[in-house]
Image 1 (cartoon, rainbow, N blue to C red):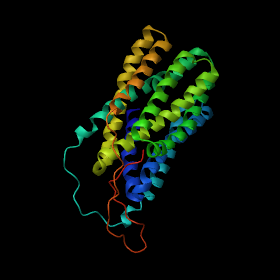
Image 2: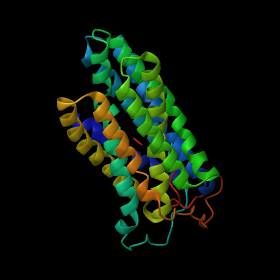
Image 3: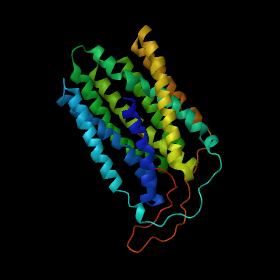
Image 4: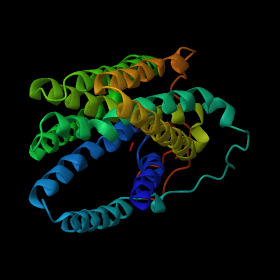
Length: 303
């Protein structure tokens, strides 16, 4: 489980760098959030595999491992940056951790809030409808399908502001969490909350990618890794705390606490939101090669 989770975590900064190196700066933020939304489609595929391999979970894991291997090869072949002229100016060496303090705090709180559904969502749904395994599996497929809508995070950021995008998505995740905790056995409420959570959480990850790229444009992939680590640490801590609450109280109270944490995640974004970085000039690419991009400008937004 640790290796599988680490693989997903390492893939995100790599994809950030891949988009930066292969797309023009003006297209990167939307592209990053679009790539990030692929997680939703993956959850749908995983749900289908769960239904097809009930009682044979090893077969399901093997199938997913095979798909991941194919995706890895396809992703590596998609990198055309080897044909580009390399930058000659050295990367910035100024400390950048201080610039990420606000998004790190926001990511940790959002992660703690999301732990309720990610860790205990299916548990409370199964407990609410004993013997109906398909009920919770379908809910997860709905979550993944609507997660694809998280690709809209880039458009929200560019149409309004990064702060607006963050506030909308985190509050949506918090609201969905509270609803699922209050009515895990009601199909309409549970499926709607799963849909909103899927779209909102994927968008949250996309906004974090854009946030990192705007604050540390010279080290966008590293900044993204830092924020996703904060997100994962928040989820780990949230899982422990919410697990204790669930063992001694009702799901509605535990999930409400998680929702409050999600609302608190908007506070670090109250300050001045970073502006979109200006495109950099680059040297001309070799004849016939794609136009060069800066490779260090805003990172479109993971999982």
